[in-house]
Length: 79
Ligand SMILES: [Zn+2]
Image 1: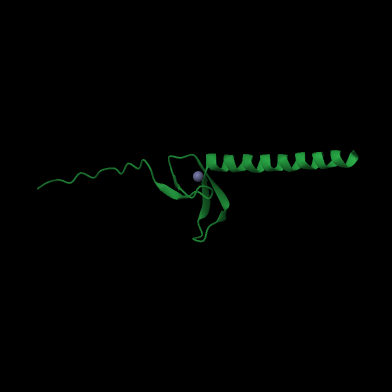
Image 2: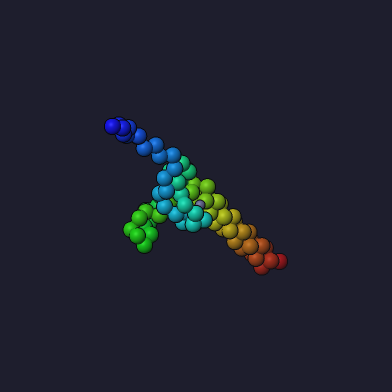
């Protein structure tokens, strides 16, 4: 009789969801963030930390560009 040895499941990588920015799978080994908003399955939306950071800075630079445009416009108005 062969004795079955129960192997402790070692989970190195487990999928926790799709990234809301790059739509790739987010793994437990990745640094990720979860949002308060939920997707169509009622699951919290997840994202790679880096994707969120990139998106944040993208929005930030867009805002800065808008501000610069405003400044340029007002300077033109003065002249
Ligand atoms: Zn991502």
